[in-house]
Image (cartoon, rainbow, N blue to C red; front, side):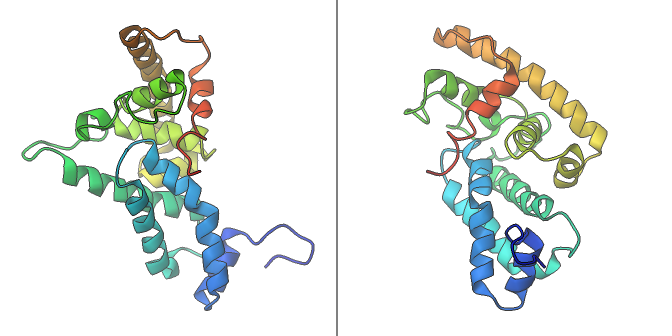
Length: 213
């Protein structure tokens, strides 16, 4: 446990207190991670974001005794978020079609999402990137967002996505190349001047945009 004068309790300390019946610790743990979970869904969907976020946090509550005492809490949390997203998208996908997140984008799967019409208060360049993110395969989008927004390690992302670390590295590299291509294509289509900044900067620039206010 944390000693006097040390940093705030870590996730597992809060979880242990919660399991022991301390609801204040449980509320603190949920508040600590709410924005990250919300952002995970908001970058991909325009609807049901709050409901899906609550589903993940409820699953955390119900499964709190299954979190390994010395495991990776954020990997556990985002693993729940990823599975919740996949179930949601499968439910929305066209009947009779095969759902393949390694090949299909949010734009392919969730009809009505991925246009430049969402997030109207944002700068056009930022909305362009949201559209670009939603135009690359879902598995690639998840990897690039976890890496640049949540600053998770390749090993942690591999645990979340249930693939080898080498696959995560490959997806990151491929995602950056696809984003550059999509940004150029969308910029031409909508007559928007791009700044020429690196994709990493563009991805980081919209983190706040898709976070809860």
